[in-house]
Image (cartoon, rainbow, N blue to C red; front, side, top):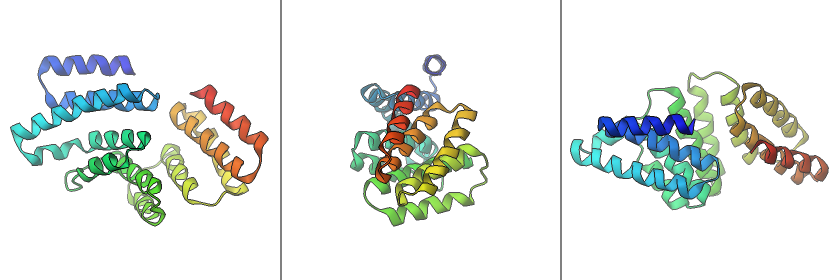
Length: 212
């Protein structure tokens, strides 16, 4: 996937399209972040941000409204780094009048907002944003698992939650979404540790390591 995006970036640069450059740079930054290559991810996002500023200079502030997905990816990156001030700043640049109209984009914005609220200890706000995603016309295991990953951070550890995470793990494995599967394994390991089941937690943690 990185190779495809790298080629897409080269083609966007050759065409001179700033919009396509931002999309490709943002995708590459998100990929590097998910792979744990945070410095590489930040480099791509830094260039993407500079391209967005070029668009702003050429076409005005309103033109940056179409980069909601890029702002979301950059915010998610800074959440991973623990820089919540920058994450909040990038999420704050998203103008919901221009965001979307695709439900997937709106869902990812909401999930990223939830992650930031959780990191800031704002559980009530996270729950409200998560609940709003149920109004989006999205179906499929991927979205249900993503919601569960947020819910797991807001709920008390329980045997029931572990059972739901086990089901989510099977769904992620079937759909071959490895990044999501790894996150489910990590979440399951954390909940099992909280329940005192150290043996199963160790198994889940080792599985997450293999997937990663």
